[in-house]
Picture 1 (cartoon, helix red, strand yellow):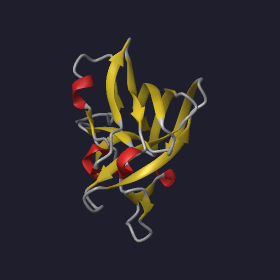
Picture 2: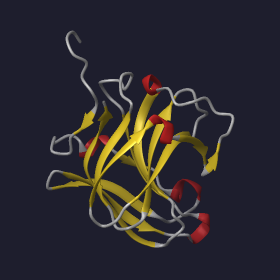
Picture 3: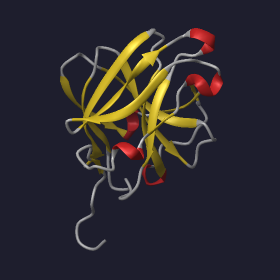
Length: 168
């Protein structure tokens, strides 16, 4: 594109946005947690039920980054309202092994919060464990965005997302 660079902004008011997200829950390893993302009144809603049965304990949703790239961004900005639980924004990049991601944790309060997550807040993890020898996050290589809950607490969860965008 010529002129000013566009920055990434996920808009849940777009009719096709809900279809861009897919769930990856602990069923992939025998767990029974349930979670997914749907759109309600222009908000993305990541919701479900976490179970620790059968070695489970996580639910997640993810989408491909799409255009534009995040080369010029300084991090990600979220406007969310959660249920008091702790969530993760997860970013997948080609330089990590399959199944690994960069994560930034954030606690929710029940009220609307605007959270700025600079790239330095993200750490490389694989199945919940830090990858100390992983390369630093390179924003231009981010190919997937997602949310995950894995706070070891059984029960219902709900995270409302008004904004997910590049931090200029």
